[in-house]
Amino acid sequence: MGSIEIYLIARQCMQTPLVEQFLKHQARQNIRYSEVHFGTALASDGLTDTELLEALSLGAINGEAKYGSRVKLIAAIVRHMPNLQKQTLDCALQRQDMGLVVGLGLAGQEKGYAPEAFAETFAEARRQGLRVVAHAGEAVGAESIWSALEHLKAERLRHGVRCLEDDALVQKLRALQIPLEVSPQSNYCLGIVDRAQPHPIRQLVDAGLYCTLNSDDPPMFKTNLVHEYLTLAAQGFSWNEF
Image (tube, rainbow, N blue to C red; front, side, top):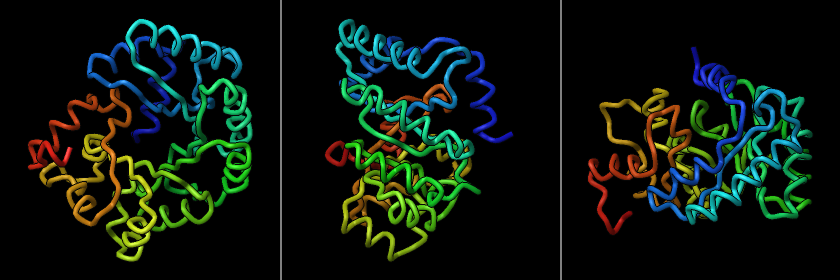
């Protein structure tokens, strides 16, 4: 069973957004600000998009007041549900004026769902003032990243570790300083990187690429941001590098 299938089963057990608890968890790690992807197509059963956004907004306000950690949202189109991409954009625009939703993302099953199919929706998101980020270069190689840059004009890439398969792409990413949201434990758990090997974020950093460290989906991969830093510390990253 793949990670997407496991995620779909797990989300059926969740009936209410848990933003306030999420912010409590972030505050415990001394995380002051987070940008979190959410998929309206994977929302809790029985909630309309408007109800979901209201619940997320209330949780964000209450969580910040209680714990001092802020969150903004990126509405993620789920690749294997391309028919819902316009709905996802419409949902994002509902709360854009309040500053809750700051971007449009592309997530889900990378294989078989190339970025080209979402180009028009991403173009409209940019016209409406949303930032754009895409999941690329994890399950599929460098061609997925090239496509996200060309067709989606992605400003930031989720994962992107497989850019190392293409020297020209590495040069492009370095020149543009496109941020790569690297998630080591996720890569290990999904078999993108062999657990017996150091994570290739070392190669990315040494190549001059702009990398950030992320926890992807903490409950699913039994991790958090502190754990990700500890993982890299054990692999030789210094405090100054962090």
